[in-house]
Length: 176
Image (cartoon, rainbow, N blue to C red):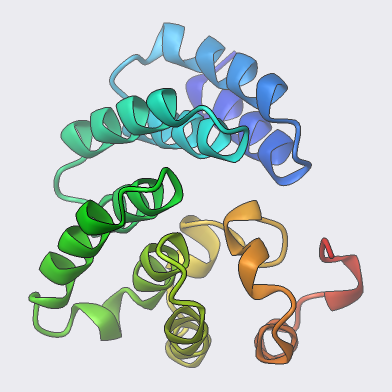
């Protein structure tokens, strides 16, 4: 199986909340491409969702090292730190992200994920709305708000449903 196929199948399993299966499939891709940061970030997401903090942090830190030029990895790392309970480290990374002039306008999905990780849901919702307005590519490359479990904390907010509708996504099919 090609590494990108493992990533696609693994992500589909993550969105279906089958985390152990996702990790198993993604690891098959890692056998072929151990230095593909995407695979490590997906294992980190699945790991944090299933409550495996140590694996989540280890894999996301590796993804950041493999893809240091990707701004989105910083938001994912902040998200992971927030979800595993290291709010101070998550906020430190978010602070560094904020020090980059214009970054929020260019990468609002990245900021939304970091803010979700530390429970700043109103701010995350504002950034998600900005992402929709700005047609941020992160809406399709950084996790789909329609189905990605990282966005679950925003789902009860009526503004979230409105954002999905603005993207012409089938809100009725979104997880509850």
